[in-house]
Amino acid sequence: MTDNTDNKVNTESGSTVADLEEPTLIVQKGTSGFVGGMLALSSGALITQCIQFLSSLVISRLYNPEALGYAGVFFAIVEMIVVLVCLSYQFTIVLPKRDEDAANLLVLCSILVTTFAGFTALAMGVFGSRILYMLELSNLESYKWLIPVAVFANGIVLPLRFWNTRNRHFKRLGLVRVEAALINLCAITVLGFLGYTAGGQLVIAKMIGYSSVGIILGWYLLRYDWRFVLASCTRRDIVTLAKRYKKFPLVTSWAAILNTGTLQLPYIVVAYLFDPVIVGFYVLAKGVLVLPRFLIAQAVGQVFLQHAGATRAEGGNLAGLLEKSAKGLITLGLLPMLILALAGKDLFHFVFGERWCNAGFYASILALAEFPAFVAAPLSGLFQVLERQGLLLFLNIFVVIARIGILALVGFITKDIVWALLFSSMALALVSVLQTRVLVGLAGANGWMLFRYFLLHMLYAIPSIGIIGFFKWWFDGSTIYVLLACVLAVPPYLLLIFRNDQELSRILSQVWGRVINIWR
Image 1: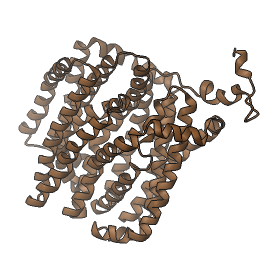
Image 2 (image 1 turned 30 degrees about the horizontal axis):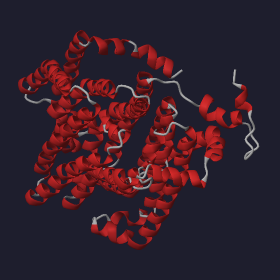
Image 3 (image 1 turned 90 degrees about the horizontal axis):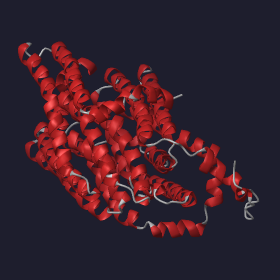
Image 4 (image 1 turned 90 degrees about the vertical axis):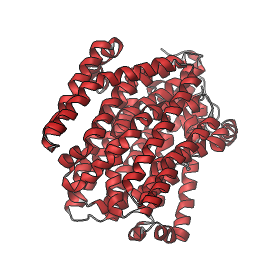
């Protein structure tokens, strides 16, 4: 039953307040808590990553490493532009107490995305051919007009995703990711079987999948929330809120550029220093390594950001929230990274084929840095919640030096991709550990307790490491036996965790029923 005041007439729109608020504030507000939201996103991410893994299998069979290299560099360029399109205002959508303010910020971001896509189209018309020639990507010149389209398609997803995160539509976000992954798989498969296997044609196939995310989320917005958004937005409020959160474009945007640069610029650096085949190996290696990050860490990070913002607004305990999230990331991320580090080449040989063995070797090297980043990245939303953008910018400078500077310097000196990846990975691992330590201090969490927790799980992993090492030595590195060792290495680790971590055992014992209930 609603209160009588809910039925007052809004003189500007001629509608009742209840009519305006019900789609967003009542009907479309999700009810997921921290664990429920994390399970909804994680289960959706699990299905998505399984589909994307199938996409990688299709690419490895139908496309050559050179085509994958060209596509990887194309989307690296797109992502470097996309990070600018909202000027980091998308992060602010989850912060205001009033949904009306969040709606104004959503409109602000949409205007910025459209504007940046237009400027990108103009820049491609004037400088596009020259840029592609400098990057030795002349084969993609006929596809340069897809860059502004991709910028808009990927950019509009940012505010829509945070709008749904604010309203706790975690199930919706999970479903959209699954639908987009299926569309992407179908496009890659169909074009590949038809013989369209060049780099530019792989770009088109991937763009079909990426564009579907914005289309689906936009349809949800138009179906449920558009009346509330339009009724809430005024030019004055948009300007006021843009000024209120001016730190985000002034400081956070630079941090976001650096953060995205650390992820995307390596593709461009490798393409400049080495041939497209090596870029293709590197793209596949990174794609497999980020599976755990997107499967678990991104889901945790999205839910952590929403709950951290709410916890701070209510004066709650940020330390407990950070410790809980960090412990879960350590537990779930450690063993997959160890397996990749020890048996990456054999796994890639078995799964993707003999011509992709080098990609597996690259993955083994990169795994050294991926685990610390796997823990640190999802928790970095705390910088936004505490409005410590300057500190985030400072730390991201070190990340750029570690991942880009060292990769470019060592690669230029040695002309050897292996040495470049090794030194870059070691430097990035140290920076990620530093970032986690800073986050622990900001939240007032117990850093020593988390360090002991990590050491304990390293001990849990010793039997698994021993199994893989024994099979590699005893059977002289036979691929099929190494694969068997990787499978046998998982149960001892899980058994030790379930036996000694009562809290985690209690949570995971509920997962089966919770996941089924969430997706009904």
